[in-house]
Length: 493
Ligand SMILES: Cc1cc2nc3c(=O)[nH]c(=O)nc-3n(C[C@H](O)[C@H](O)[C@H](O)COP(=O)(O)OP(=O)(O)OC[C@H]3O[C@@H](n4cnc5c(N)ncnc54)[C@H](O)[C@@H]3O)c2cc1C
Image (cartoon, rainbow, N blue to C red; front, side, top):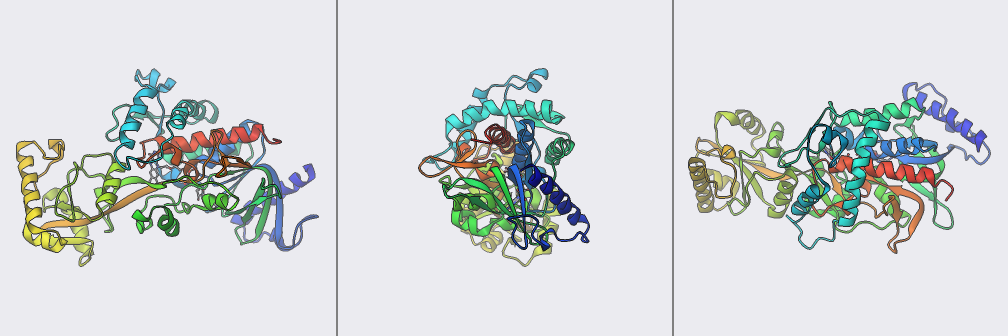
């Protein structure tokens, strides 16, 4: 094994060099050692981690901390995944960082908010598993402190977000990229290399169904077989995979076109695990990021509470001042939704973008409210009554849907515009079932030996249909930390 490992390190260096020096001789040109096949490279390690986003890098750091050797595979040319695109704020309650700032917080308060939000849709949903959520909240505190004390990550501020009342999101200075950098620095200092442009393709199993490694594909398409005692799947969700959206959440078919999720979010790990018998969580869903549009230059509408939304009946259906994940769910529920605005100066940039895109089915315009309703294809009478009522609320400060007066701006200056609203996602809920150590389970509840999954590969357990601010990056780091530690401590079990 020792000899094999020395050789593996050499091969890894070659792999990395090849990424920058096309001149490196392909290592797959000849059998490398006994057992190698023509055109195939064999590597061995303790733990192979598939995916170099928040989950994967936390798993790698935790495994290294507990004495294991790791190989990290990343499909893209760069690390980070959705974690790097995120705000990087991780939620946790009653941390030493909150206490130092005099912030009073408790798990109970977060749990109350969690339950309230999860109850806003799908009332008979099977998830969350609140025992798991409770455990996650305890572990989140440990992760938040571990990131600082062990990894060397720094928090620049602790904040609430949007409608969240308590300051419990621990943000670094520079967002999610900094979370990734902190973990990468920790790994680099300990000699761990990440193999980019090397997607994991399938899991290797023995005759008992135990996982014994991964088959990957190198930058030039070469087959790389990595034998390992443990495998951790950390490939994120499936928001970028239209086939999986059609299979799991047909309500948002087409949303991959405008998702904010990272390019690698194609569900690879979930499919790899399913192939070796993993049970998938029921009722997969999306992580909502407010209201999407398909016209360039109109992204600011994603969380703009000053506009009003009307459905196919020409009626408002909610106060627009709602949590962004709930807004996405409402858009899905209503099906046909328009965002309405007038020609007020504040809308000038949006109008310019919409004019540029016209003619398009995505935008409607009218010199009168009646004309706009016709262009939208909604009942004229309803629509005009809706706008009149809204404008009345703007005057009196009493919105019919209870929106705060500062967000209720009258719709009165012609011409009038409406733009189609679409569900905007930043990830998915779903993935493979795991136990509390993030070991992957079969449908009968038995563990698939040596296989772990975390982050968006295994996150449905925490949610019904509503994402909780700061919980997804926290879950990535927490599930990665726990899986990495458990795998490292149980290499021979
Ligand atoms: C724009 C945006 C903003 C967000 N803001 C927040 C926020 O503020 N707070 C919060 O809590 N959550 C936020 N989220 C959600 C959160 O970032 C994600 O849910 C979480 O970071 C996912 O972590 P992950 O490790 O599961 O996946 P990722 O971070 O996406 O990592 C998965 C990695 O695996 C790689 N990969 C995929 N397939 C393979 C393969 N076959 N082989 C090898 N590698 C593979 C991917 O390329 C990627 O690098 C946000 C998401 C987005 C997109």
